[in-house]
Image (cartoon, rainbow, N blue to C red; front, side):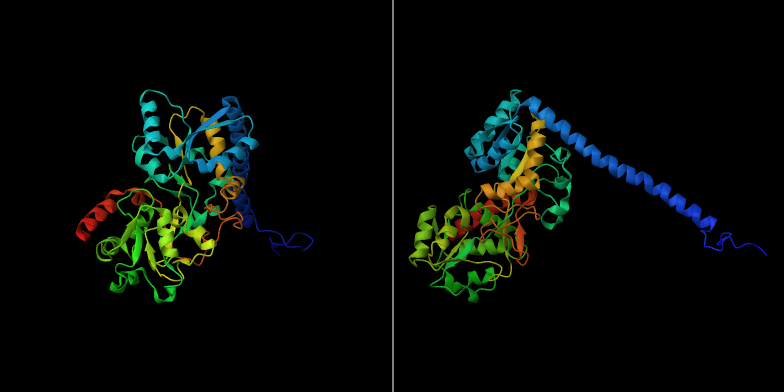
Length: 388
């Protein structure tokens, strides 16, 4: 009798030789993968340790940052006492940016990191090739892992998707109403605001101003269901009453001088605060208007200057800020006014007015198309002349 290769002498089952060879072959392919994964894990730890030690040797990191980041930067200083944090106030706007570019042209590379609004980063530093890609500076696995971030990806403003990274995304509605004069249920779309019966009954920020009103204009212009036509009609047909005074707009709404407002940023104008104080002011959201509302990075954007004088300290700060601990600190220190794009952190300290909701419909105002203000400004100028 020919012996059965599947049984041993005791009658037990054995593995056929062909199958055994296949199994060994598979293991030979898998084993290097396991070894590589272990080596990769140790590689980032080694890289991180070397970056921290080199950062201590550099002893300082210099930022171009908005003052709202003070508390966050102080916490970083506590976590890494060997790295002194210095910053140039980004609130100076174009003058500060121009000074930095002037210094760089003179061969003085004094600033490491940018943290503020995307407009200056994309409109000034990026085209002047003053920024390096930030992706290669990301070391911590929890930062690199895009599944930890909103919509499962890092949000960048530049075409290459590698240089100007957004880490904040607050819900923003730029249209609202007086709760005593308006039943929000009568509005199901932004287009309902263009009904002739509302002509002359809406207050707005001066649309010719770049500051304050521009984000609302961008939302309308770039929304696929609103766009240039809606913006033109809003500005030319609705006989808007304009103001450049935050307090005046809130007062007019509170005393029922106007039933509606539009193109008013709620965070900068004090709309949210007035609502919290019990004034009769409401904000349209996705529950009212089917086109949804905006998701704005605001000042929560970060970039790395090229030829940074303290490259390792810059890496350490960037990774810490974008880490889970850093973004928890960012939310906490900003007292509810921001909402980190990280989704693996608590949101209890984010104010309900700006907190993202999975059920809401958002248009994210990030990316190169949103930063270019020229087409928006052109429509504003044309429509305003037509109105007059």
